[in-house]
Image (tube, rainbow, N blue to C red):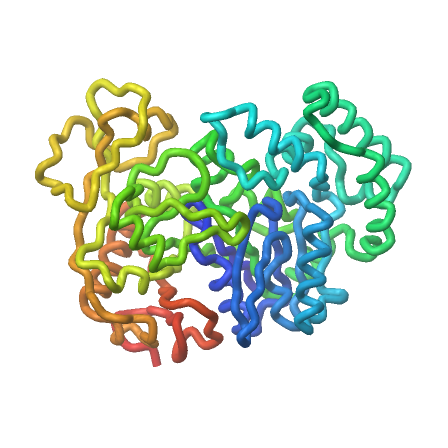
Length: 468
């Protein structure tokens, strides 16, 4: 048996959902679980011509026979949970007896969503740029020990007291600006209670017994390392632990020794939704081309994503923190039409840093023309360095391959320049960690392919030789 974890390495939207479904298609995973976050995450999958948008549900529900858990570390918005289940049912997918929510997970209320809107409005130009889904306020309630857990839903008297207490506290804070009826939300949960009675369970025995039986387990990461509340671009982050550490706090019962493969998902370029520093962002035609070719619009919000060059400083940080065993490099074919491909390899800070807007080098800047002052290859905790006036990025430039690779099935199908791009990234990662962390999967093209070795838009690279 083994536990496999799929974790995002950037600011989300790397293509984790496609890899998860691809792995599930192998048929060996009996249990799939989310361990953190809420419905601010978004995976879009296309299976048998049907499009599925997942936000809180694990993607394993598309794999018949797989049990799916929403773990202890998640915050769950019940209306969204039921909406996604109804959508799957309408498409003929049976979820009965295959989806369970940890009784230790926290409830995300409409109250939290309204507070999220008010907090972002208060911050003005300094807003985080949240999805306004209520994730932050729900985790705030949890950490302030005033939250309501899923187990509380089963006890109406205790549930009502706790929710009214939350509402009263919020009313004192926001006054008449908070347009919210606690009695209406209580009545809604009176209707949910019976439907949820068999879904809310102690997930710990399920996780433990699965490992005792020798079942293979797949863990779905939500968001990504640069949005982690400890290791990301704080405060422009989500409110949960999105990386390796979040697995053990967010899904009780996982034996560390059973975690055999941690797969870091890396987009072939960089994107971000919301506010916050983005040193390799390209506010030019290069960035626009990435947006259009990559169809970079958020699954959860529909917002146009910010786009830029792959940032190796940020990737070094993610690889080091999350200890990936292998890498899934996604959306390589988005770069098909580029004459030249940029990769940010280091930051060059001015000797005297001051707060200001990001000064990002463009696709026309030449590395040799940058006057080096203080060059760093690490990713700083101090965000003032990333928004310092005069910050420059040193880029390595690769010649584009200028051909369609969306139908590549094996490593030798890729043009030489595409191979060189992939191998350079792989060698760079190996150089930082001092050990081989192979790019095991390469994503090209939209859609979903079941056989990663021989068919469709996703294939596995195990060596320079053709995959049999």
